[in-house]
Image (cartoon, rainbow, N blue to C red; front, side, top):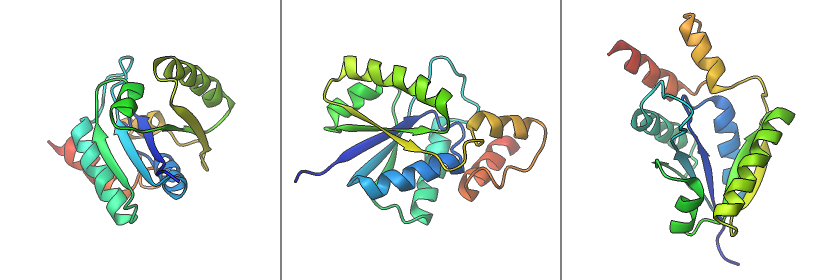
Amino acid sequence: MSERHAVYAGSFDPFTVGHLDIVRKASRIFDSVTVLIGKNSEKKRSFPAEDMRDAIEKVLSFEKLDNCKVVVDEGIVADYCKEHGISFVVRGLRNNMDYNYEENIAKIIELINPELECVYLRANNEAISSSMVKELLLYGKDISDFVPIAVKGKIREIREK
């Protein structure tokens, strides 16, 4: 049987414990998982992608998720997968609104690269989102329960610059 490689793509701005939950689940299903920090043309980043990559790498190392890696790519996910021989795209679902949104993305991915299969994984905590974390930061609230410690440290470092 050939190896199964997957991409879990997102802006991860910032990477949350909800994202980590999906990476953990994907790492048990697939032989390798690429956490792909992409560019969303509709969003302005709050934290540089390269800084978030560094923090996520620390999280993956701490969690001993040795079959996972992190890359930054500003292209189209379907093209990245084709170029790297990846057959699966992992998407996390928190609720039915996410499902409807993700189904639209899956259809676009399929049009660009019909060889790709979208796999949905259910998030354990539907309330956690990057947007929520940024909102809490805006009001000076503690985000310790919502982001891995390495991400919290990187955010603190970025904000102190």
